[in-house]
Image 1: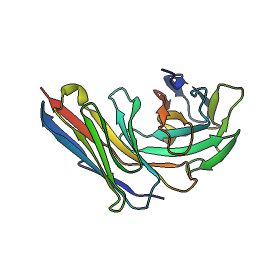
Image 2: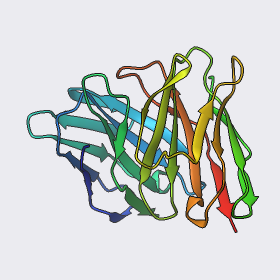
Image 3: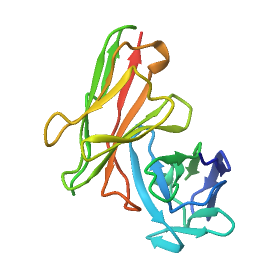
Image 4: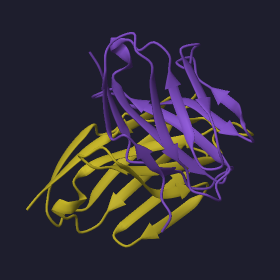
Length: 110
Length: 113
């Protein structure tokens, strides 16, 4: 089992602000996913990380394997970024079970 | 871009009835999953399926649940005798295995009355 904690649980930001969402986990992993869940419920995969940093448009994800911690950053936030952001981890070595955080609900105000 | 499709989008059933939730994973994916999310709670793993058999299951996935790949494209979750607490959003997902990205369907909202 892996305990996955996210912070903050809720976040309200003004349009244009830089946003950081944090994820920590208790047991060493082989991969971490950042997911986005929209109000309708659908889940979209944003990033899969096993080390270092990845960037896609205004989104940046980093992971520190030694500290068991990952961050998701959103630059120049926009109201369409409003969603729940979920961190999910996969335990090695052969397990395909993913453990999910409780999610961070982000609201970006125009 | 290929996607995971789930049907129906919403299912209402009476307590004690059997339900079958259907999924069509992405065709070249090898691993299939079912997750559930009770309203307001985190997403929880139910089961993973590989090579026509269950590879892992959680403690939630008890004898009331079963999965099947009846043909080359569908992947189903059956709940034999639904309980009120089975009301949740059920997500199907697939990937190539290992550390490859997970692709989720849009979910089936199950309401047990």
